[in-house]
Length: 463
Image (tube, rainbow, N blue to C red; front, top):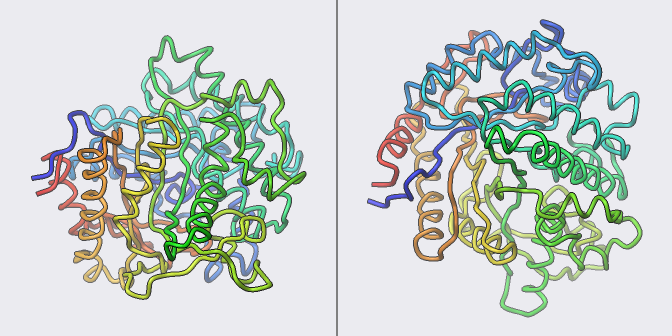
């Protein structure tokens, strides 16, 4: 038996745009993903999240699903455009009522809400009217939206995440155009990232000044990163691996924990990397009560050898390819998920230790980890997801070792995801859920992984 610390947080996660549906109901305004997914060719088979899992109409059913598996914590995101249809201005009270129903149902069933304020679904009005994340003003709009959320929900919500994976918003949304708003640039990702970090800091400042002392909650940010393992023991490859981590995770975490972007980024990116004003730096530094990490896998890193560096590096897999100058590759022996992501549990332990060392032993929560499996459209195949069980078990073994052998302050693990859902540009073609969703009928069916994970949570550990 591998027991986890007392009060360890066990949860499952979703995101509003991926499950809610009801995209034009009860006063909700459109978001950038509504617009993006309705452009032909942007999403797999031109699918969209108009209905998704229809969670908006199935809140009580879905909370009952959580209760049935003994879920301890549920991480979900709020739809900004459901609460503020124009991104600013009048509050949509129907949206507030929906989230009140959800939060109250969770608490009535003994499930702790973990609320993400922003999971990529910027109100479309802010994109069209002020150029979205590229406008420095956006940070103030984030803060205003967050203040409404703290005011309406903070009496019951004690665990807040400001942003989910700002790297994705910056690089996939503004670098390679794979995500909404679908822009391509070598400069915009740095501007978008900079404004997101400023937005995070302003949100935290509002919470700490106006709410935290009375509501007694915690607030942090969730970043994603895959591990970079040196391909060889050569000094150049070790340096490339470290550079890859600094360009990926350090880009967003260094300003918060160390006061500025990594020096390796300053040297490589030059004038395209924005500067923090003194006022911004004062707000940014120290602006996270915990370190949220979404972790899935990793790759081998080496010093590029070809003349055309950009062509040797998958741009969508950490940092900005031409700037970071890291060649990434796989070990052919590694197992892969249905998204072709490498299954490398021991890299999770290495990632946790890197964060622990670099950022001064912060409390860490893994806020996403999970796997997509092929063939799960068929519910009879999906329910027998022994590979998912093995995956989560091995990643949790790595987490346990990081805690008990390395002294990492890991305080929680939240699996992705509670149920199959709209997987962004991949539409409904990939399934991560502990519960199978029949998108034609909306029926939810627990997979073996849901039942197994229920046992992990009940025991607070692995057998």
